[in-house]
Image (tube, rainbow, N blue to C red; front, top):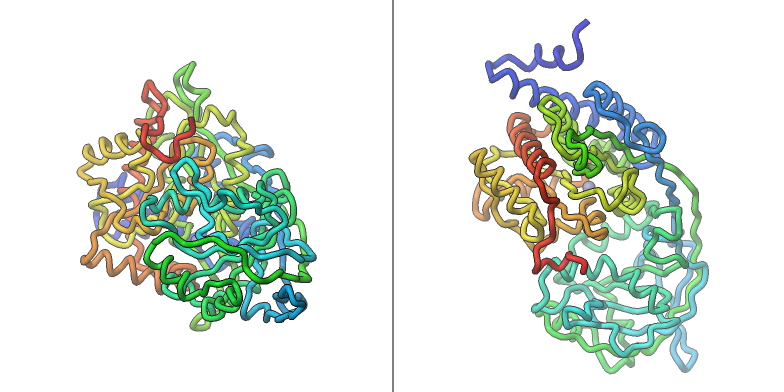
Length: 524
Ligand SMILES: [Zn+2]
């Protein structure tokens, strides 16, 4: 009987291409096709479709001869909690010192978030506006300084001062709820200036009605206690500032100009009764390993990863309800499998290689958050993380960028390998998106482990730039991120070739990767 791979080669070899390249590209496409098929139902965390995808990946790891590196064979179960906030049954109001009360329309004016952690059932707390809410004392900016936040709900505005690098601001936003919790704050309301809105308010109102998730182990959450998290309609945010001596248009203008923003008490207490239902679920990460050849270095690991989950079945767009996630991130999973095949085929690298597939990335990087803090190998022995999340193989691979490339010695490794393969590592063409802290590699960074994530390069004003922008606005997190897209499998295989060589270089080097002296992610 023909193996799956041989069968695919028969179909795909209509045009003569070098056998090895065709093999890799064919298998990559076979894996993408299997994982993004309608039968996988969009691989929602905790769903039967996700579990079927996990079984497929395990089957492929066995086929490649990789050893299990989970807790239960290849699996590392991650205990999660799902929360649904009933915006209609919940109540909230702004209460002034003179007793006057203004009720808020939940689900319209204010949206109570369902992710991040459990919401408290009751809130009765004063509101304080703390500017951008960025807590970066080491970098000369601290919106918490001199304030007693205990028992308060803080209100913050989007953006940050111009003098701070974008990555640092994103980093501070990511860590904000944990920092507020430490100060005893009870919650946060995030305001966005009309100019800085990414997802229109109308769509946010629909999205907030879906379930959120967080890790079941309270010790692994930003806040061990219930914490209130909400956003406010930009068109109505002015109501929070009444009688405060300030107005939202003034604050928004300062934030849009990245200027200093004042901090002051607001004239209201927020009172709320929140109705939420919670249920437990478990969804696995997958871990496999290739043992290193060096008696000493083989106890160290280069972790190569991609998230396996996507959005499942949701609102129909043009009659399609299945969010297949072909690029996000079946493509990344297929790439990790291809790299595993390449590394297994050659001589064993000196260090061991870990192949990781995460759950619940789309729910807030939860699977990787769990893995990075509860790894199945000694944490201090993980020397690097090379991650894939939507590399976008939609045009020929000539240049690439690897967010994180300016932060650690992995950047030099990437440039050296690229040069040997006729590729050029370019700076991130859209650095303001802060990709480096928006996918699973960030959880390794938080634990002090140097990391990179890989993307096909493009330049402003080119055809590639238009393809990239078009993909983001029309297919990203939409049912049309499916197998009907013109994915370029030979180009994807070239990226796999590059990262396999990079992984080998890092695994074979005498010294483990290190953060550069200037890096904001370096921990002293
Ligand atoms: Zn996604």
